[in-house]
Amino acid sequence: MSLRERIGVDLGRKIRLEEGIEWAAKNGVKYIDIQLDTAANALTTFDDKRAAGVRAACEKHGVHLGLHTLSAVNVAEYSPYVSDAVDEYLRSYIDIYPKLGAEWVVMHAGYHFSKDKELRMTTGLERLKRIAGYAERKKARILLENLNKEPEDAEVHYLAHTIEEWRYYWGLLSSPAIRLSFTVNHAHLVPEGIEGFVAALDMSQVGEVRLADTLRNGYEVHLKPGAGNLDFGDTFRRVEGKGFKGHYTNAFGSPCCLI
Image 1 (cartoon, one colour):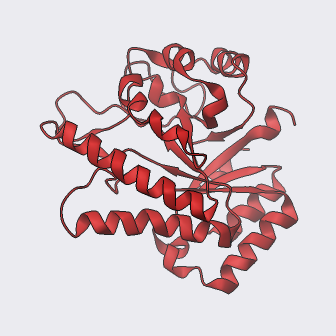
Image 2: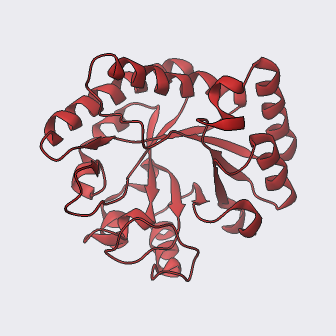
């Protein structure tokens, strides 16, 4: 499979899933991922009949489907009742995974409020261990994403946005159900940069590389290639040079303007 064929698209919340599959088929896109949280694609809208139709459409067109949980749901949540709801939310993505014929689901490490960082990290790690065990039983594959830097003086900060923080969770890779989703534009926002992340990664543990342009050491923004200063040629050479064989996901724009 050529590099071009390995580059997919993050549909996000932009399009009804069935329409997204048809769009991908018409444009020669083999990999898509989508969020199942709102409107026409909410998890609760997929009964057995609809799920079977999605699965059949992916099989017909040779489209590989991934799911993407919402980063606003705090995987590091420890408050009573809300904590149980986060577990249920993540399990619901695993439960629908085989029904839709999905092949991966992107998850996150959560976020902290500065003073409670250590507790949030341990809470998130324990939750991901539980979800990994659940995914193993359901034969699902989770990809843990490195998230973005927030401004230094922000109260809320995403976890796993530096190599050091992301590495805290890498013990989860002992589970066959957990691999990594490497977002290069997030790496571009921190001092170690894409070069540092690629050097630290074992690409056999990376199931997906996510792409968007952005500004070096800037803040979170998903730009079209050329609108920022990320060197895509150098990034592909580094990632491919370390033996990455998986798919890439474009995470910018809307489907109508990506091809």
